[in-house]
Length: 357
Ligand code: ADP
Ligand code: MG
Image (cartoon, rainbow, N blue to C red; front, side, top):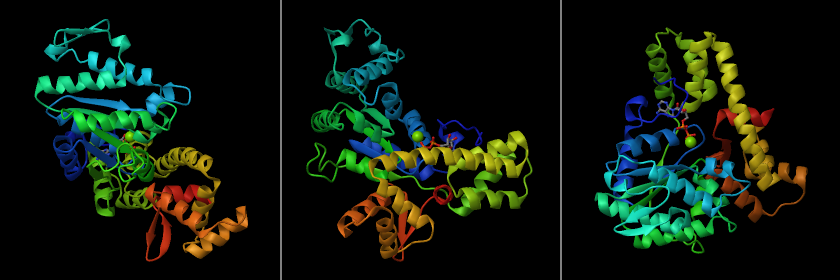
């Protein structure tokens, strides 16, 4: 059912996205690293889960945000190793894993105590499992930007481990998703020579909001599934407000279905989106208050560089062009703003509304 608000887990539950799904599956087979990139609620987790479900080998799913939330401001190495062990040992359906228990793991005759294993030991085991099954094992980190909180060096230790696996464990592949394009790139540092992962080859799958036509179709199909006949005008208005972001379309469809009131459904959806966006804006602001100023400038119609600069300087004092340029570029990379014909625009209409409040 399209209007089920949970992440989808199978191809059949999803609207469209055949191309993206195939690209992710190909990435899993052919590349040591695959990135799934797109803004919040666009459908990254759903695609990742659907792909893992279809992948012919073993796929392990980890939610980095959940790992982060479970700790106190960081993801510790033992927490990560624990989580991996838990997922692995929970996979009793693989016959050869039956010898493994929480107490001991039998690796080709060698007994290892899981409690003593670190992240690299667990990777070794996963690699070994890949060898045994004759298929690469996929280790997928959802919301990978939270891996920056691994250990005490901004995630560098984890990256070093992943780089090592990349170089010497051909039976292991990684998938990362991120809602903040730039942070994901910046964190993994695939293009940054100071990163342990510099220069590694990767596949990148971009997940975009649906275009207008498909968004309307999405709502029509969803409503017909639940036996509702919804006026075309209501559908058009919802797409005007929510753009083609499936998460918000689902939320709207679900609320409409339950409450039967298009106006209320749209209000509830926008209220929920607002709260989520407010939280993200606060996080952005903590990194630099100027991010928020730039976004606010753009949202109130200051689309050109010089106007944005005037606004930022009026609010928080002088800023060099280099500094402003780097902040603007980051906002572009994170998917908050885009540049069209020399003008900066807010990507997500709901974000724009929140900023104007
Ligand atoms: P992200 O991980 O990018 O934030 P999710 O995969 O969690 O996005 O998707 C947000 C919500 O939108 C999900 O709960 C799911 O119900 C819905 N959704 C996303 N993509 C689709 C799709 N292609 N078809 C149907 N529903 C979708
Ligand atoms: Mg997600």
